[in-house]
Image 1 (tube, rainbow, N blue to C red):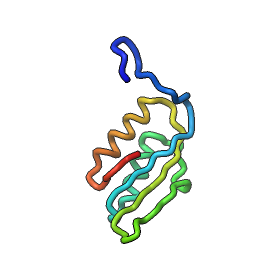
Image 2 (image 1 turned 90 degrees about the horizontal axis):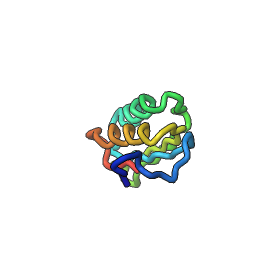
Image 3 (image 1 turned 180 degrees about the vertical axis):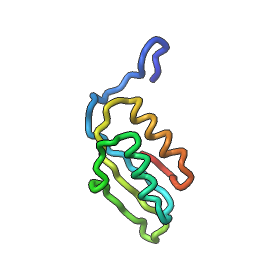
Length: 92
């Protein structure tokens, strides 16, 4: 909800640990590209903490990245960049 005279209302208190799930084509370099994007927006993110899952047929890969979020603006920018990537199908 965006207010005309102020920031959007949120129930999230920052800073906080925030999980983001990125799902996309299981292509060479997908995980590395997604981690590079996450690190641009959350430089303190530890890539070793990523959880990866491949789909049953091996066509898709999901990455769960739990990062330390410092603001709604940070998360919005990260979601926008991830969602714009051609290999990404869904960002949750």
